Image (cartoon, rainbow, N blue to C red; front, side):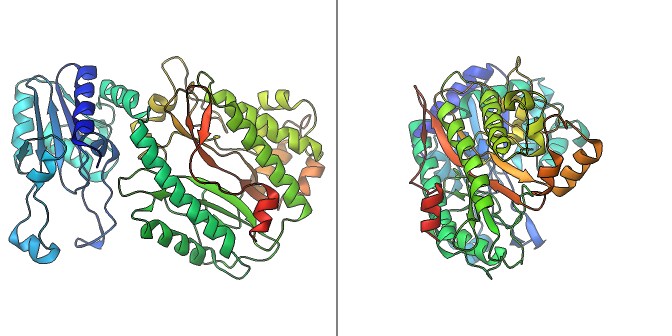
Length: 460
């Protein structure tokens, strides 16, 4: 955990932002994989961690602004628990470490919240994302599951986003620890990948690095020779010489801060001529996007810049014709670059995504796009110092999408479909780094991770 003062100050600022009422923050439960006592790895809710810091299952908290009270609800271990787990620090002692002096049994929360309801006091809560949250809100607040998201507090969402978006120095340091472990994972990927290895076997080796350094992966490892499929998790599929291997993997620290990096390498020793040309196109787009990131710049405009750079590269290969900027204005890039350039990152690899992308990545005046290619851009708002974001342009040659556009002769004034047909089986390339926005620009987080062609091939 951070210091007690960090959590106290965060809660005090949140109370000032909300002003009145009661804030209910739900913690997470353990979930059984195939029966109750055989559980998935526990992951605490990130907002709960941000304000209360306790990575413990089956606890919840309230901040009663009107009555100046903060209470954690949860059970102390019984002797039956201790037989299986051994002695552990008491919940009341853990609570004291984050500045909370009042702890009540978990069973008390039902009556407590119903009493609050009877007094007509406003209860602020966040949109639920787990099944048990819907049921808890139904039981405690008499909110039907179908209405739970709609009735979540927009004021609370905006207040939390206004705090968690700006990473403190201690948070950036913790994120950088996660990124450094992520770099170690990718260095191992570059060193050991060989034809004949399976995607799953390689992904398992990388996850072991994350675990050995005190945390775990921040999301399931994306390891694939089919880079055109944006989120293909590792399969029991042998990789072959001549293919490229795409690894999108990140580590999470013990404090639950995340890293998120991607590299694409030759499965054999060197890129082919076409692979190198395509790789250089993506690398140029990525480096141009990173250079453009500074306070006041709309991330949406950085995404547009990356798209233009990608089409400039494809124009040099004869696949795209005409003016690349005009082509992007007509959404030609979405044939090759269907996702967003990146996203906020912190305790969630897609930071605060459960609070709503419109609130996190956009503003009341800047709305999230709804069309193909733009609806996947999670971040569009102006960058500010303290933001931690990812930069991950890519080229994805998806045969099904190519066939659909070609059948419609879509935007043929910009696309040479005969040339494109020669690339239909190329797959895809993505390169990703994590940056923090500074007062006058940005800084790439973490140790150096090779991405120039020569240094990547030198590791092969």
